[in-house]
Length: 115
Length: 112
Image (cartoon, rainbow over all chains, first blue to last red):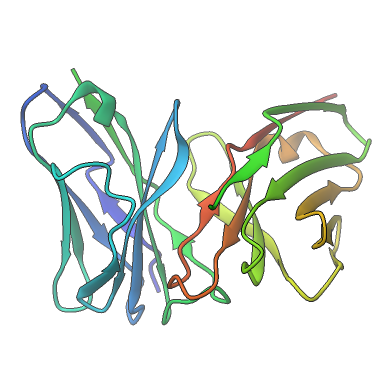
């Protein structure tokens, strides 16, 4: 079947605006992860979903960041009042049931530029 | 705490072996991973090693793990220009749902 898809592939926004980034995991995968890749910070974990709940939100950098997952499938990462330091590539990954022994399959990412 | 360190750049000649090194801090990590990222492409899992192993070989790839020193390496034999990419080492701490802690990535440049 299809891999992990993300939309949009690129997003340019003005400082202060809200943005929504979408992730469609592989069908049947219950675990979903969001990561961020930026020049200064490398690749960092943001949040992890098991089904529709998020047992680990420890990587969200501020309360401007939130994420939800509905129907155990699609997830949306929302950034409110965007700042220039939010510019990065946001990557989503999914795995079958979650856990260290499982392969995570990554989407192509959403490249966010905040002007 | 959780931290993964890698050198940032490596340059080799085509046909040589490449060795990319990584150190990690979380001794609870039961799996350690190598991911590859090519320009404009997503992350691709290359290989992984379970923490009770000290070596794993997969075609041109050899992973060595020194658990005592928390040191991981990836050796690519007969490196080709198509191997040019960024290579990320990652650990997955135990009981944390599988989240990955990545190193900064090593940019491998293969010169003909």
